[in-house]
Length: 347
Image 1: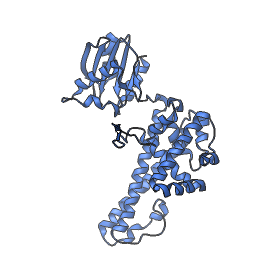
Image 2: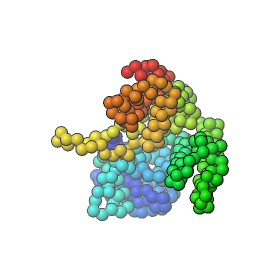
Image 3: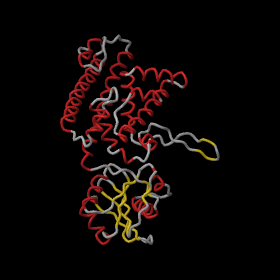
Image 4: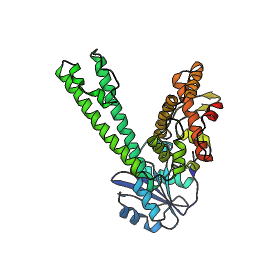
């Protein structure tokens, strides 16, 4: 966890929403200079902080509407700090909670050096990263439809036709397998929606391959040296990581990618591993996919998982391989080297 501890003349805490925002401005002594709610519009925000522009720092919690506020502060050369939402739960700990109280607590965290920092992703790359994330969402929805098709056959004890439903050719005339009109209508709906998702995903992936601006071509090609990682998965990893140098060491990176568990300990007693959602869910998904594809392409990976399965179990063995792959990717990008499968499984 990193905290913002720089000193400024004024500290502005912002409780940001889609249409409104509440801001609190403190001076160095901790006295409130301005505390008010305004519309979430650039001109209203700039007008409210105008008397405190010199020596001002702005802090806001990481929620879905932070893009415009970050961009505005950068354009106006105002220091902006993004707060880690899960680490900032302390602001909700009081008996009473509202926007006015939250904005003041954000400002006091900022002033006191206890403001947990999140990464302010560069403006030029955010739209492509968001499109890649949207593609992952569409892939999951498509997977749910295909799983429902399989479950429908099991539910009515009907033998499905040969072949996987992930291929459009295997989803032809599935309604003929059922006698009930409502079931046929349900299957038809799933098949139609799955076809729509297929077309949308094909279009999005083609757009990404043609138009994604690869800010670091060398790293992109290094990621593709990992067996099983293609263009799209390499783009996901590249855009979610952005700059490997923002991670001080490999432990920070694998923790950010959710590849290792946290731990709570008190008085020598372990309290479990809470806060599993702290980190980047998209990197976690990408490394899970990369691990599965690595096992498909590499015999050494299969033997590694089989060996770990004897000691633990299959899910744990896959997690160990994912964490190992995450460390390898970190050092590949740090040292600017390609993936070496023999060296990877030698240690």
